[in-house]
Amino acid sequence: MGPKNPRKKKCDKSDHPELSKIENTEPTKDDNQDSSKIQNQEPSKNDNPFPQKPKIQLFEGDCMTLIDSLENNSLDCIITDPPYFTDKLDHKWNSEKIADDTKNSHIQHLPKGMKFDKKQVKDLQTFYKDLSAKLITKLKPGGYFLSFSSPRLYHAIAMGCDEAGFEVRDMMNWIYTQTMPKGMSISHLIDKNKDMTPEEKSHMKEEYKDHKTPMIRSCAEPICIAMKPIETSFLENEKKYKTGLLDFSQKVGEEADKVPINVMTTQYMDPIYDKHFFINKPSKDEKGDYNSHPTVKPIALMEHLVKLFTKPDAIVLDPFSGSGTTLVACKNTGRRAIGFEMNNEYYEICKKRLF
Ligand SMILES: C[S@@+](CC[C@H](N)C(=O)[O-])C[C@H]1O[C@@H](n2cnc3c(N)ncnc32)[C@H](O)[C@@H]1O
Image 1 (cartoon, protein in one colour):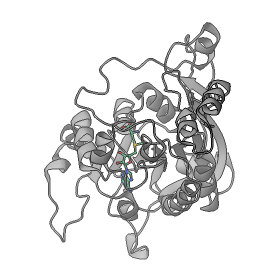
Image 2: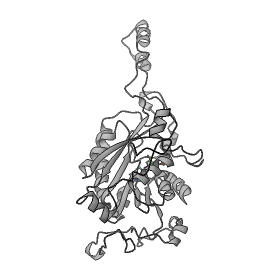
Image 3: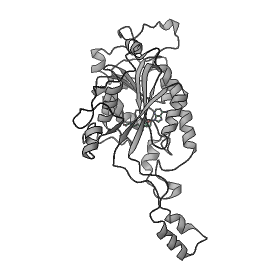
Image 4: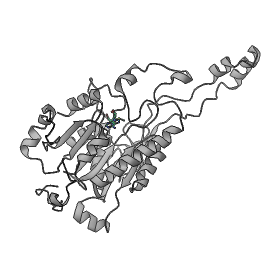
């Protein structure tokens, strides 16, 4: 974005007063050595809120506001694991309430993420459309917007992106086996029923002992792969912005000899799956024992996505950084990154992981 970046078309800000508080100038050696510096600076009211330009930048606050401070057409990629808008995990995500949430098993007190509410779809789609409308202006043409999601709400994310002008080009899936079944038995409903005799209840409980509410145990997270439309052709777009084409040298599979596949796993499963889908196992302590975030992603998975969808030194945004796995992956793979996180507890964890 700055004059030092040969990929960036020179841009005269006097022509574009709306442009930029965050700039994508090349980081200097000093920036990289002192990237924590930005964390210690409390900007005064009149200061530019993003005074430093280190390789990895992290800001505490609501992304819906912070995004406005980014320069238009400045990002190469956006990779995020957003709030899924299941109950309690929406854009008002409150870490204390979630940590306190120890209740289980009854309809009124379902643990986080389990309550079905049709409104969640509409709310997520509206939120994602608004978010995507902001993000599309900040991304370069041909830049990708990758969003993790849940099987039940994927369509809301995809339609939100689509409605804002993104092209939904694909869907990738992260699969794993360590999850809890979520379907619930109906025996407590039978017990509460006032119209049945004890014998009828007992009979019905036996008859329905294997039937549960329709929540199939999920071992997959779909990732929506949306792209800001290219300007002319993939070739011209690549020449101008270095975006749009994917790096198929990022091989996958246990032998790292398979071209990228839309199914990925970070655990050993069985020989066929491992041969084709395996990315890399997370290390035992990669999260950090201080990391209380409930939905931390494996670093290897994020590194794979970063390398597949961006070039070295690209600028990647994660508007919902959580404990910062996307940013760690960018740091490990030589990309520049900007992260936003509105929750102070997670922001502090993120800082600790990164700096
Ligand atoms: C699914 S988590 C991300 C977890 C992350 N991938 C990791 O590995 O740690 C989503 C995060 O978005 C944050 N969040 C929710 N709404 C936000 C908003 N409007 N602006 C910034 N952060 C937000 C939540 O606090 C939560 O930490």
